[in-house]
Image (tube, rainbow, N blue to C red):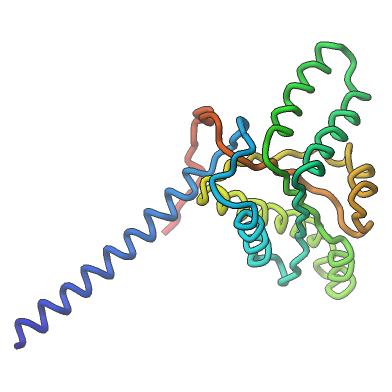
Length: 219
């Protein structure tokens, strides 16, 4: 009986260790599989509603300094998604000096428009200002921590989409498009656009990139 108990306990320990190893492997794979996917299409591997739930959950549970929850997202689908990239090119075209530059930029923007949808990421600057007033000693840091909040939220969304087999990349055409985006989708003035994330079907392989070691361990 003692031998049997030992065997059972030993099996439990082995199972638990295997489970922990699997969790670590899953986490590693998740981060490694998240890539900037630029070749995107409209045939999602999961339903539109599942994608919306993934984005909502990732933003909702993303951490933020002082639990400020300052990151917000707007998901553009269908004609609204297309309209965003039409607006983006129209605003960029005004700044481009040559026909060659315009053609190159148009091709790039068309790739984003070919995706299924776009997530717009915003920061609520009313929250930032409120925290600056509430904690004046940290006033200079809150705008920086706010940017980190959007970075964390977008990374969470990106990883969650990648885990579901949905490709994405992230763009920063703000502030060039800010005014027209705010007007078109009735965005309150306290929400400041920080990034745009096209997402959709993965229709091409991401280009290989070199990963450099950037962690120093001190014991």
